[in-house]
Length: 153
Image (cartoon, rainbow, N blue to C red; front, side, top):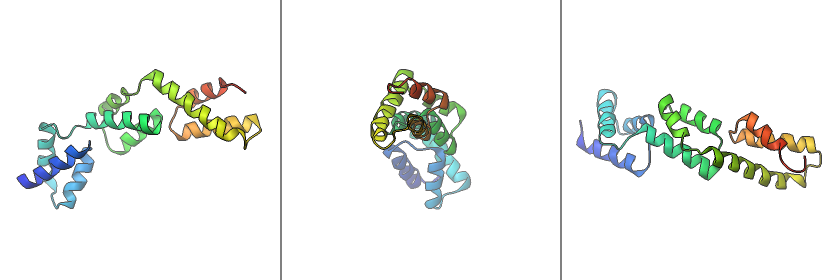
């Protein structure tokens, strides 16, 4: 195993959390494949530079706090990145239920203020609010519950 490549890969992982797939892609760019790539990834995991569970926690918490994404969108992204169900479940625990509901309510309240001037039909306004929240990845049952409970409807 090439120590220089291992060092470069460790620096790559130290910069920010990565998935095994991301590291594999980077190794391919450096012309490292197959068994050697697998060895380097195993070494990075043993040295704690690479942890999919840690990636999932960081990713889920970050996307929720910074972009107000819902659980469904976050899970879908983690799945797309090839993470295990265990890592995804672990990452989703980073999202507190109270904060989740509060964030959804705040998002919808802000969006309602923006849409109220343009949309006078209450039914269409509800539809637009729900579509917005569903697009952010929130669960439809929860979205409709919150939209139905908002003032002015």
